[in-house]
Image (cartoon, rainbow, N blue to C red; front, side):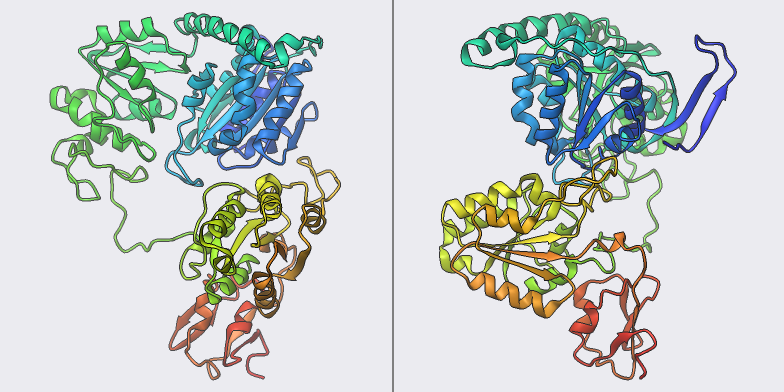
Length: 634
């Protein structure tokens, strides 16, 4: 695994010299898991967690797999842990929703070897459908939750998490956020620990959760919770950094970095173990400072518990409950209060944004209870910079499908993937997108609510990877319960949105070894679908005909629109160009929303650098003005 930098210091430290690498949090986590002796790791790709398994797959001592979904990934890790091997499951925050079923029971059974569940949360919705705070899963399951504040802590905490898991016979959640997962900081490297495979012992009363066994294990969970609470008081990742005691701040994770940058002069209680919380440590800290603030991203998870203990703190009255935090936001909210009594405690370069009355880029005054943009800095972006909304890539095979769906004015139940961009202008061809695999269930619900005639106007749209993740059960439900809808599987031969990871339909494993390739047509037929068509995503005429045929049918049907992701092409196809003399200035080509196409001097223009040669534009041009470059004037 390559890093941006490797720094070696000639210091004697046990094994000799200290080696440090500049790593993003996800790569630091993979390194820490490897050093901790992990043997099995499983995941489903999801930003911001994807790089963890990609990195672990490069270590020959680790079996790493892309599972069909997060539930299966955790179940594989559970089996490995019961079998005596340290294991890890990684997923983004919404993936834990999928894995919650085995997780809640795993909290009862405990582990044999250590098991760590990585939850990569996404404050700011950089690549997600919600801003879920997964610390609540730790409280619900009553298992430990660790929150690192930089890449070094990521590595250290994952190693300690395996020790905690085995010491307290429990799974451990390691909660990252996008900023930690994808930011670089120096990490001290170590050697792999020689952790032996633990013996496997048959223990039905521990691992078979019949009601009678489950009752007994619940007692164990409560006993463990008390032991963990006692451990929290002296946990090495919880620490007090004393400074000026007029102001104290309790914080965790990346918010700690923002506090240190914005308010360097205040006392800080940094919590690395955020469940269970250390009641005495927190109480002593709150009582030792004049005013205490809680700075945390998203929900008042820490704040609510601290208030429940009867301790007076200030938190979400000032700190936004939505979006990602930043040093500027901390300075403008908490800092504005601190600056009023002790301006010397606020960072000089951030004092301006912290002072009450200072106008924010959004026009509100600091302290007015506004919800600031977490991505803004102390200097507003120049007004002349245009917005850059996300777009499908030039040559994306999904573009033609949504163009036809819009043309036919169909109701489209969508799903999670880069094709969700079919909801944005100018295509605007998607009506709903709830979660992974929901398209078929939503389409079925629409039909049952509004009748079979309405169903003729409804299609579900799902990607190949998402179909294998959790779409098959929706299709089975439609067949079994008498639905008549149409499903379009957008088969681009990869998990594109997260960076082109393999899945059971690509023919390769996470380590890029050849593997059996599932047949989507046969899966659909095996689930009871008799009408299955495979069409070329680049052929608009064939697409339109197939969609009209299948939506008219009075039984479930599947259309597989197949073309590899444009970014997987090894060689660029011939590009297209517009003949100005033949252009009708109708702007129909712009309806495709292709980034390569623009309009200038009264006619269409195709950027040859961006054009991917898909040929969709030639099919929508009524004046035959678009041809392959070099042929437009013939």
